[in-house]
Amino acid sequence: QVQLVESGGGLVQAGGSLRLSCAASGRTFSTYTMGWFRQAPGKEREFVTFIDWSGGITDYADSVTGRFTISRGNAKNTVYLQMNSLKPEDTAVYYCAAAAYAHASYRYRPRDYAYWGQGTQVTVSA
Image (tube, rainbow, N blue to C red):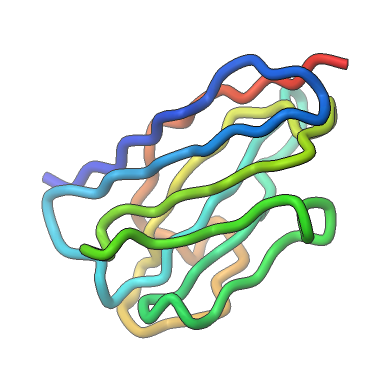
């Protein structure tokens, strides 16, 4: 059974940092793009960032560029999201996801991903 489990969320003051982790199990995702999405109350799920299977290609939403960094663990089944200079508007549930197909880069849409974690809450206070 495939599972993605996020951790590392919490409450932080504006300007602070958090590091989210996503551990995948049940299959290997070393050849799959991994992404992070977020969803704030009353809003649609939105793209935050992805990293391709090699770790060599990443992209970010404009709203987080320069503040967030995605990376993969050595075993490629773990993905991290380092979030710095957090703002109240970053408050949301953050979801880790694995792409539906191997060796597919540039995955920006939720429908490009077949596997999802349960989400972790990030709250940034002003």
